[in-house]
Amino acid sequence: MDRSKYSAGAVKHGFWFMEFRKVISLRAEGMSWEEIKSLNENENIFGAPTSLRATQIFNTVSARVKSLDDSFYDVFAGCDLASQKLFALVAAMAYDALFGALVYEIVREKMIIGSNELSDSDLRIFFKNKQEQDENAAKWTEATIKKMMVSYKSMLYEAGVINKAKDVREIYKPLPDPAMERWMQDNGLTYELKAITGVR
Image: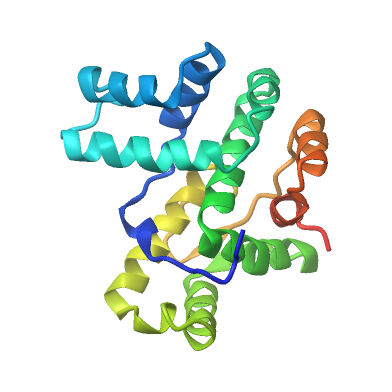
């Protein structure tokens, strides 16, 4: 993946863990992507408020699932809930280069130095740096950055990596299932593994 291409698309995205788990379950049952897409269009399998939102959820969640090798389905099924949420987090990081960079550069670094706090100022510095490095990011407005901060904090919270304090959030160092760690190492996801476990 070209990690230099950053997008502000996350302003419209949720963590969507239950939807992620549903898609993996359907894929593990042997359903094709087209069949799941059709099922979503006809039966609103994610309980979305509008057909447009249902399509958006399917497109994002399916892209996240596709960003990992299909061999993770069995590993995912054998993990506890906490590790399944970490799988959803890793898939979101693999799909969204900017989110992956944030977890790697900010959350991982905090865990390495033994700091257990993530503040809004940490995120603002991160976004400012990206705007200086990337011409797409340079065009983002302050309002867009604020929405992205909200979205990313929400995803980290729902993945169990931070708490829900207002300005400064506590970081909880994840402990992925050993089978998940092995799978990530075997499938070229050392970047994401280092990011979520806080190692150099």
